[in-house]
Image (cartoon, rainbow, N blue to C red; front, side, top):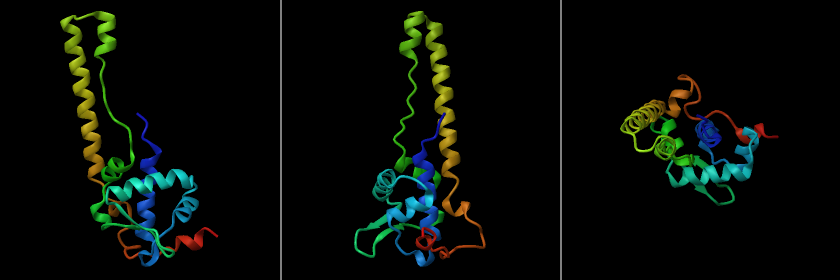
Length: 154
């Protein structure tokens, strides 16, 4: 399984917002330049995170993006839910039935595979929901933000 790059970008955007000195708003070009990613693509991710209540957006001259709630309340699963368009849907019935018809053994095997995949995805989501942005930060550092990302882009 391949995890969408938007999840990783979303995680690091939230980390940057949390670490920004005095939690000042950051503009998308500052975020994208520091991350080395496309501004256009990052804008889509930011829009989704705004809609999910993970970040705030202020379009004023001095505005930009800020973290919307404490880092301890934002999980990787929250970010994944906000930015990833992947829908995990497993349906092998069509292919198996094309090959083997309506054999009862086929239906039983399909059910076992489907259950296994659903349990695996639920376990993955549970693990991602257990990790907060705060868990990713050093305990004794950067609690109120100490990095000026704007100065790092020049």
